[in-house]
Amino acid sequence: MSSTEPAKREENLLIGLAMATLAFASLAAMGAFAKAAAPGSPAMVNVFFQNAIAFVLLAPFALRHGLAPLKTRRIGMHVLRAFSGSSSWLALFIAINLMPLTNAVLLAYSAPIILPLIAWMVSGQKVTGPIWVGVVLGFAGIALVLHPSNAELGWGAPIALVGAVMVALALLSVRWLSETEPDLRIMFFYFALSTVGTLPLALLGWQTPAPWAWPYIAGIGLSLLASQVTIIIAYRYASPVVLAPAIYLVIIFTALINWVVWDRPPTWLEAGGVALVIVGGVIAMRKGGKPVQHKAG
Image 1 (cartoon, rainbow, N blue to C red):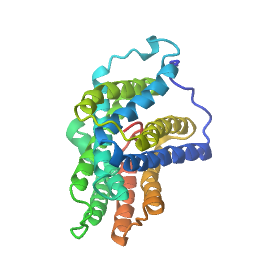
Image 2 (cartoon, rainbow, N blue to C red; image 1 turned 180 degrees about the vertical axis):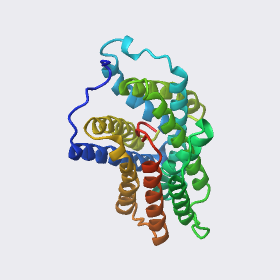
Image 3 (cartoon, helix red, strand yellow; image 1 turned 90 degrees about the vertical axis):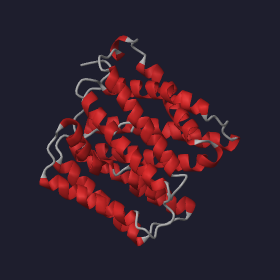
């Protein structure tokens, strides 16, 4: 076994669920940090620092055995993953500055109901009847969130949906990479390529973050890295098939944060939309074959 790949431990569902819960709570916290930082720092700058902070913290561990364990023959797929992952975070960070936090996160994390359609278009993977049921339920939930009377959404909604497509593409690229690449190599190339790739865009629209925004920016990077480390630990104790639906904890945690911090409880229509998206996504994941590991976008 590669030195970059952790040994599989004896399965323990309780530990696996606990680590998955911590991972998705970290992603919810990241969205909240991004919303808090938005008035004092542009989204592109935040995405750059998100990746740079995570890379600086990960690099010493990834490089402890030198460069040899990080050699790859799939650099093109790593580039695809970095592009789609960073694009998804950029879309989310822009959207949460334009619409309620919970709605933006719900739309961005509707990726599991989009994933079967993209897999079908890209690789010809069959979309069965039960998967279509999940997709239809999920889009019905999105329709409830996007109901015409919801004037708060504006341009944030289409931007968040673009983010969902990018999330789905990122998840597919992780699926393909995980066939040959160990976890640490995938994370290393993601953060390295994303840091390099987002730097020119950050410089083009550079605005020095306000002093008060720096703790939130640090929180964005730390929470993203924490989510990746804890989900990898979770998969060492429990099957990704069992843990896949836990991705929707992000939406639940985000709704709680939005309610407590910004005093914005979900409406009944939005709560119904969340429920339909979660049910549809779980059906699509359960009936769609091999689950996708939820790493960095």
